[in-house]
Image 1 (spheres, rainbow over the protein chains, first blue to last red):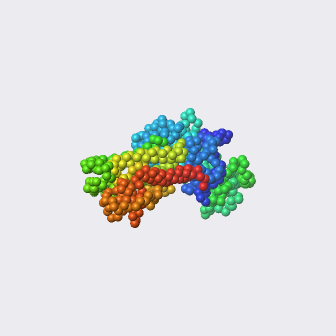
Image 2: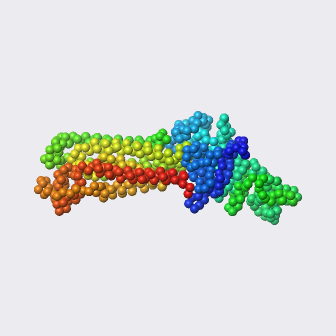
Image 3: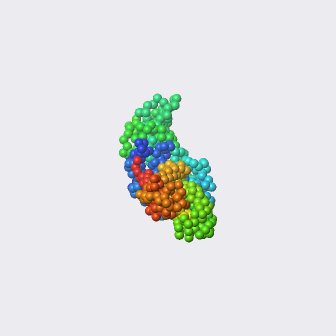
Amino acid sequence: MAEYDAGGSVPALRTEHLGRRYGKVWGLRDCTLEVPAGAVAALVGPNGAGKTTLLEMIIGLLEPTEGQVSVFGETSRADTAATLARVGYVAQDHPLYRDFSVADMFHLGRAMNPSWDQQLATARVDALDIPLQRKVRRLSGGQQAQVSLTMALAKRAPLLVLDEPVSSLDPIARLEFMRDVMAAAADTGADSSLTFLISSHVVSELERFCDWLIVLANGHVQLAGPADDLLAAHRLLTVPRATPDAELPGTVIHRDDSDRHSTALVRTDPVQPAVRGHAGWQADPVSFEQLVMCYLQRPPTAATTGNPAPAAARPGPTGKEVTR
Amino acid sequence: MIWVTWRQHRSQAVAGLAVLAGLAVYAILLGTSMRTAFSHDDLAGCLARSQGSACPDAVGAFSNEFGSEVNQAFWAVALIVPGLIGVLAGGSLIARELEFGTWRLAWSQTVPRSRWLAVKLALVTGGLIVLGAAMTAVITWYRAPMDRLTGRLDAHIFDFEGLVLTAYILCAFGFAVLAGLLLRRSIPAMIAAFVPWLAIRLVIEFVFRPHFLAPLTTTCNATLPNQAGGCGYGLGFVPQATGHIGDLVLSANNGVVTYQPADRFWPFQFIEAGIFVALTAAALGATIWLLHRRATWAA
């Protein structure tokens, strides 16, 4: 995992109250988040959550209706060369010109990007055994994804945005693709480290690769922060069914009731819940996927309380609960 | 960007050259035999001496042999060709990117889409102008003997010489680029551009063109020889009333003839080409504005 500096230095990406309206419908609203330089961030949400809208505004393909985006401290303006140059982009379904050869695609990249790294591009497809002269339409889906990623990397932009990069790939190709992304994230040579923002509606494929998590649903940020801290701050409690929410420590994010027991995801930072002394209570660490699923199942009205403030500044009943 | 434009449009460029080559073969074959027939009967000398009235048999024979082919038939076939060329070049320019999702690739490189569009439009427009000018030159060359007999103001000739052929191509191109942005599909965009192009083209030809400039009037002199059926055309394209090759008679009622004189060919060419170039500019200007707004207009 890449090392990142969570405080102090300029974030790779910052959005402030970002919103985009399509006619009368908001595709994304009041999105405030930060991704530190060097992070590999997962942007997770169901289809229609506003992921692509958010990504297009970050890339500079779309102007926000309200709020703003900044990449490495520079405010983005849609459709300007300066903004476009700061972000490499692998679009969903990795579109390429089907009648172009791989070499043609790289020629296009060179023609349209002043900082294009031809050596990096050819070395990468060489290592992947993709013939330069082969037409794009004759490449497998995995190879097309690799050519798209190669073009984004060879653009030499400090922030890379990958929109559903593996959703159209088979499981083996998914794994290989994500491994290559991680290798690229680690292998940055003398350059400052790359920052990745990878969207997906499938959580499991990102779990072991990402160190930063953003959960988006219904056009709002539900949860955002360093993946490890978020996992540490949540517990999955199994309690007798009759136990009311108010007796549970922390903030109840989601609760499933079965015949005899209830399973509740609670956010408990800064203090761990004390379950000793409660007969029949059990607290388990939560997995990446459980965490995301619980936040995605929150009703839309709870969304406004998403993206919680830093733990230290956070008011809440947690302290009282655990001292019982 | 120049390379990108070339790479994406080179098959269209080859197709354009093929059209031009086919036209040139046809024009050389027919143009050569027309020239042979024309000089064989010394039509040039006869026309210079008497506007053709001294050699009615030779004029009649030449007109019978070539007239319907190079005038009516050629017009009927070639009427739609500039429109087809234009919509084929323009329909896919933006629509193909939207259709296949490659706009996310094309417009996320370090070239703003407004510049991407400007370069593409400039280069493809330039290519179409070259093609249109070359087609005009070929047609003008091959028709030259017939033009001596008919003048150039008649629609069968006017539509393919001078400036208008190129302007027709550009107009269809502009309509198709705009339709491609609005409809996001290449084939529907081509159809949606071609239909109004043809309608405008025909309305201007039959309704507006005869009145680009106020017609002249003269009275019909019924004592002229070879008068056939009143005061319209007599032999070939020499109007009875004016006695001058290429004058275009609009109406002849009660001995009063209204006509457009043959020397208005170039003013009419500039007027008609101007109309089509203005339509092209309006369509392309709307395209540039809409594409820019798509990105930067915050709902």
